[in-house]
Length: 87
Image 1 (spheres, one colour):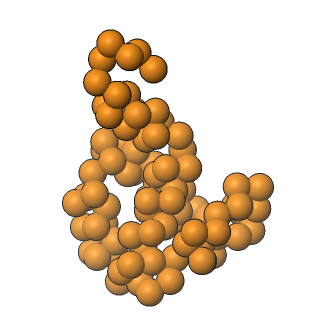
Image 2 (image 1 turned 135 degrees about the vertical axis):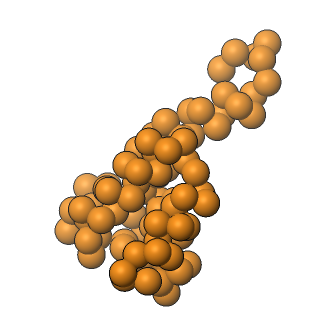
């Protein structure tokens, strides 16, 4: 980190740059709306078993990719989930 600049924005960039941030966020919002996460329990992600641990790994990755590509827009994510046929 560059200590001459504000640390919060640096931390936010570092945190959101990791692909797991998007997956975990998407999973938590999915669980909040649907009652259960794509990976359940939501706090128990195992990156080595993600493809077998997730009930729908393609859905998780598609939502996480969209979340990343759209600047981590929570409103868009919530809209995607609540306007889905699954909801």
